[in-house]
Image (cartoon, rainbow, N blue to C red; front, side, top):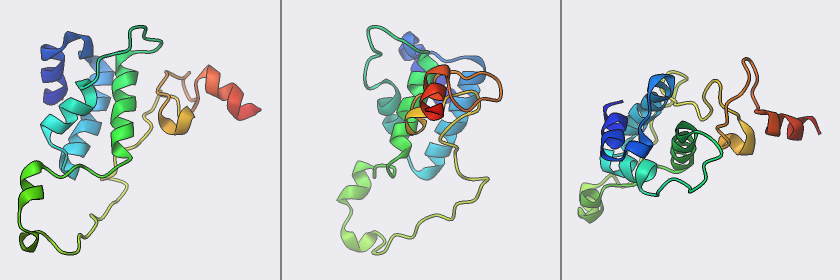
Length: 138
């Protein structure tokens, strides 16, 4: 959460609070554990300006950007990329994932539409927003 609060202090348009800050703080913490750096996450979250006309919340935009970044492995930092190959592992071994260590791609209360990238709020107990609920029923 400290990183998200720092981003919000630098760029107030990206300030998150309350449950949104808590939820996205968990996602960011998981990404940091996976090898993302704070600077890389700053770029993912606030490297692009917000759309001129926002049709959703800033929290949903941040969640979508983080979800999109989670679809790929964490970028290697520049220093590791320049190390001689002999210093790096020749065969990378994937981490063991369990239900406790994997960050969910869809958060409770956010729409799972558009392969989990929608992020619009849902009604309690629903998995999809009104827009995508109609798509699923068709």
